Length: 495
Image 1: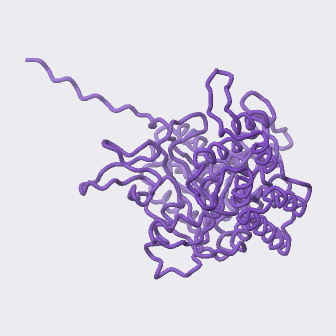
Image 2 (image 1 turned 180 degrees about the horizontal axis):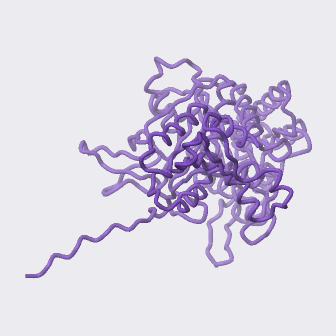
C-alpha cells in the first residue's frame, strides 16, 4: 500500500515586499513617534486610531474590476460581496471619519494619527508594501492660518526628534498659483475645467520630474515629447515654446526672499484670478509664520515644490533634509524629502456632497528614522535587561525574588529560563541579549548572604582594549550584600 506523502512544510520567510522589525527598530520608532506626538499634543491636536480596513468605496482611489480591485490596494470581497481593502494612507480614513461623525466632532477637527499602511505595488530596494506614516490634519477650516500652523508644527517636530536647524527646510508652494500659470499658458479654461485635462496631467508629471530630467527634459515633455536613453518615447503636452516658457518660469520662480518670490509669481499669473488668490495665500502664510518667529532658516516659499499638485487644491508643503549622505556607491547626495502635505478641500465632499476644507501633513516614519541614524541620533545598541542567572534549580523562588525587586525599582530584568546546566550558555545568552549586568548567586554565596554582579559591558571592553590601570580601578565583577542588590545594580548602571 502506497504511503501518503508528508505534508509540505511552509517556508519560513517574509512575504515579498514586507519585513520584520526587531528590538531597537521598534523601540527607536516608538521613541521618535512619542516625541512627535508630544509636539502635536502641544499644538492642540487629538489622537485618532481608525480601522486598518476600509471599504474600497470609502478609499475612493481604487475600484473593483471583475476579479479583484485594481492595482494599488490589498482587497477582497466579504460575505456580503462588498469590496474591502487595507488602508493605503491615513487621509482617506480621516475623510470617512469626518463625514461619519460630523455631528459629533468639533469643527474644525484637529487630529493626528500614526500607524502602518499597505500598498499593493511592486517592491524594490527601500520600497516596501507595508510602511509607517505619521499624519496631522485640520478638517473644517478654510483659513490659511491652518496651513501656516501645520508648517510650523512640522518644523518643531523635526527639531524635537533631532534634526537641527540648518539641516532641514520646509518648502511651501500653492496649487492655485500653478493653476493660474496654466491658465496663462493656455492649458486651463476656468469656464470649462474639463478642457485640456490630458495636457494638464502631462504638465504636472513633467514639472514633477525637474530634478531628474533637468530643464531640457521637462521642456521636451511640455512640447512634442521626449525619447529617453532606452529609446522609449513619452508623449508631450503639445505646448508652444511661448506656453512652455510660462510653465518653466513658474518652476524657477524662487528668489532670495519670499517677497521677491511672490512678486515674480504675480508677474507669471498675470490677470488670472485663481493665480492671484494663490499668491495672496502664500503672502499670508509667510506673514503668519514670520510673526511666530519662523524665518527662512526653517520655512521658505518655493515654487519648485510640485509633488502631489494633482491632488491638492491650495497650499502644499514639503520637508526636505539638506545634509549630505553617501549612497550605496559612496557618492555624496542630499538626503531629500521626509514629509509632505497640503490643502485638499475636495476629499470629504465625496461623502457629504458639500465642500469641507482640510489641510494636513504626512511624515514618512521610516525615512525620518533613517535620517536620524545617518545623523548619529539613533542606532546605538539598546541596553538589554539585567539577567539573573540560575545556579541551583531548587532555589528558583530566590532568583525570581531578585528579579521582582529589580523590576519594582524600575530596572529592566529577567531570570534565565533556559537549561541552567551549562553556566557558560547563560552568560552567552546574556551577551546576546545585550545585558549590562549578570547577577550570580550559587549555594556558597547564598549561605554568606551575598551576590556577584558581573559587569558584562566593561568585561567586554577589558577583553578588547582596557589597560591594567582601568582594570584595577573598576573590576568587571564585584561581590555585594544580597540586601544591597538593587542599590548596587543602580550604581553600576549609572556608571
